[in-house]
Each structure stands twice: as C-alpha cells, then as structure tokens.
Length: 541
Ligand code: NAD
Image (tube, rainbow, N blue to C red):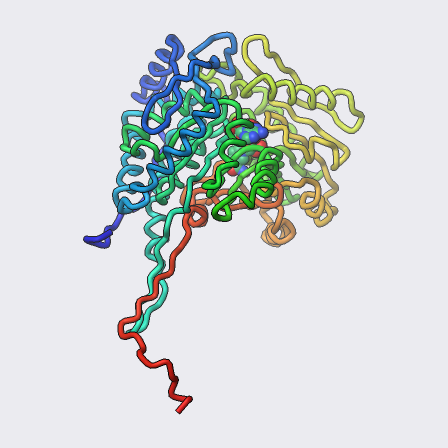
C-alpha cells in the first residue's frame, strides 16, 4: 500500500432470506434448481486460468435421486497436479507483490456476486450436489460464504495494522508476508462455504493455492470457480484439481515448495496427511503450516433445571438438520431422569412431524445423506443398535436407498454411557441418548468429557447458573465451541469463530484472524535512523 491507509467496508453478516411462499428468492432458487436438474453440466479442471478437460470423467448425481445424472467432471492425472503447482508458483511472483487492497477488492467483489447474481445458482447447486434444504443451502452457500469473504478482508487489515512499538531513533515494522511456496486446500463435501473459504482465505493473504474439492461437492465447487473467475482472481492463483485424492495429495506433498495444508474433513484422513508431511519434512524448503478442522461427537447435556421443550428443540434441530451431516451436529445427549419423560415426548412429537424427501419440495425438513458409503455405514450402526441389549431405538431406525440415500431421523436410547454410538462419529441423522440420575450431575459431566476423543462442540441447558458454571468448568477442554442454552450447531462468522481441539482439529478458528495468521510469515524490519559509527560502548572508557 503506497498511497493511503485504506479502510475496508465494515463487515456485516449477510441477512438470511426466508424463501417463504410468494417470495422472489423462492421463485429464483426453484427455477435455477429446475434448469440444473433438466440439463447436464460438464465440469473441467481449472489450471492457470484455463478450463482443462482431461477426458477421464466421472458422473454426478443428486444424493436424493442417485439414478439421475446432472453432469460429469474431469479428473486430474499427475501431470495436471504438477502443472497446478508450477503454475501457482509462477503466479506467486505477481500475486504476492500485488497491493493488499487489490486482493481485498477481488474477494469483496466475490462476496457481492454471491449475494446478488450468483445467489440462486450457488444455493440450487448446493441443494443438488449435497442435498441441502433451501434454508440449509442459504445459511451455508450464500450467507456463510459471503460472511467469510467479507470478514476475512476486515481481519486481514486488523492483522496488517498490528505493528510493534518504535523509538525516535529506530522504526520497527512487521510485514505479513505470504508463505514461501504454494499452499494446498483439501475440502469436505458438507459445506460449500468451507470449500470456498479454505482456498480463498489463503489467497487473500497473498498465497497461491492448489485446491482439491470433495468428489461429492464438485457440482457446487464449479459455481465457486465461476464466482472466483468473475471476481477477478488472476490465472494460477487458485487452481482446482478433482479426482483421486491419494494421487493428488502424494504429488502435492512431494513438492519441496509445499508450504501449507488447509484441510477440513475427517480425523483419520487429516492424521494420515499430517504423518505424510512429517515423513517428507526433509524435502521441504520451509516448515509447512498445517491447519485441520476435523470430526466431532458433539453433545447436549441437560441439567435438571433445564426447560424440557427447549432441550428437545435443541436435540431435534441439532441432530437432524442437514441429516446430521454437520461436524457440529448433536450426536449424543445426557438427560436427567426427572426431565426424560417430557423431553422424550417433545422429541418424538417433533420427529413425527418431520417430512423427508427431495430438497425441491420446500416442505421437507430433511433430505438424503451424501452417498452410498455414508448410507451403508449409518445403516450398519442402526442395525447393530437394533440387536444390542444396551440400546433401543425409540424413533426412526428405517432407511431406504432405492431412489435416494434416505435415513429416518433416529434416536437410540442406551443404558450404557460407553455404547459405541456415544463415542463414534456417524455423520448422519442419529442421536444417542443416555439418561442419568439427577444426583449424578458431576459424574455425568466427567463422563461427557471422557467418553469421546473429539472436542468440537457441546451444549449445556440449565436455568441454574451454578450448574451452568459447573458444566462450563468441567467441560473446558471438551469443546472448542461451547453453548449455554442453545443447540451446538450454527456458528456464525464474526460472531462464533469455529473449531475444536483434541481429535477435532488444530482449532485455528475459521472465520477469525487466528486462522488468517497461519497463512502469513511475518518479517520484522528494524530501520535505524542514525547508525552507530564506533564499536566502543561508553563503559569501556
Ligand atoms: P473426508 O475426510 O472423507 O474428505 C475430506 C477431503 O479429504 C475430501 O476432499 C476428500 O477427497 C479428501 N480425502 C479423502 N481421503 C483422502 C486421502 N486418503 N488423502 C487425501 N485426501 C483425502 O470428509 P467428508 O466426508 O468430505 O467430510 C465429513 C467430515 O468432515 C466429518 O468428519 C466432519 O466432522 C468433518 N468436518 C469438520 C469440520 C470442522 O470444522 N471441524 C467442518 C466440516 C466437516
């Protein structure tokens, strides 16, 4: 920045549109969905600003309608990945030198494109690719993505303006340089916003990126690429490769110029990538930054003072929205004996009224899970619960993959607090509930803390302030995002920076300056105005 200390627009959260009957947004999204459903898209790789067709393709189908093909995407071979790396390194020469306000302008423009002309398209693509209801698509693909883009620009300027003290004879400055080399973004299927944010926030800080989206999110990743393109991200800055995750990752991680991994996905995959980076450490020119946000086994604890209707609503929304496929989804709950009859009856009544089906029918609260692998895994745990004396299915338990991967909202009641679905992430619409004796509150909090390897989100419902405080203290390391009297999902950028520790990730808090700090390598510059010209200090006289 040579000619002014520029102020960026103050970031504000994008308002969530209602999609109520009769609204313009409802008409627009349904029409975009229909035209996508009735046509076939071809998604190329995107390398050095060019659309590349490898000729080796995979088909894409909506999870709620798996025999219907909505397009194909081209997959990368090793040459494509190597080209992405070399092209990124070439682009770095000019991108890293571009004044920050120009980078900010690009990503602020991307936010406005999503808020306006691309809103219906990115939401419809997310409904199609990931089977989100319109509300789930709106809070993810439109609002959260826009918020990431706007708030990150503001956080970037806050970071840049954080400067050391100086004296009258020496001026101290910190330059927040991008990492030396290129960065690698590996993104999950479940949030279009995360898929876009992981590469975008690294690029915003001046880095160049190879981005590998999930095979189950390619359809909406294409819209993200179109937005970045139209917003003016220059060729080579963000390169997109689809296909074999192992080959792509092996190629990326063998490059000496690999400088950072920005991952969101499952714990097992992240640990494998970390190991691989460790094994390659002697190859790299710098120590790569490793950021990973991973799985969860997120809890709701109710104290005997809680309002049972509010607890039930927290369970139903927390566990079943987006079919429980949020890393933050409530998947285990601890309810005191004295509240259980009420909580149970409210939960069962709510579940009775839940409609499930394709997302283009806007009266559906739930749709399909992402793919057959996920469907089969969840069905296996449901079957096991049906046959285990420690468990009883008190709601749902049905599933059907004839047309789409549909699984009923399912509640397992267990008498064993260590039953496997109290600790294993299923990533589906299944919650397991353990009923504890009211007087065992302290022991139950200990149980919550020690049952699972994860520590992503969790909630305490209590109207007793002492009990809420007791839980806040006892569960200090059990969740990176902790909620009092609210469901454990729905973090908003700029309000609740998101991430967890233990097996849930490096807790670098997406949607905050803490995350952006991982993508810079500060250089300290001290400038002395009148340099000493005699090596002898006065005490030597
Ligand atoms: P996943 O781990 O299957 O895939 C994530 C990404 O890793 C995809 O791009 C995939 O292609 C890639 N991948 C898979 N195997 C790989 C390998 N061997 N080498 C290299 N890359 C590989 O996860 P998913 O099913 O897409 O997403 C769901 C998971 O993500 C859940 O565990 C969920 O909790 C987690 N998640 C966490 C957060 C968070 O913020 N903590 C947010 C969203 C999702």
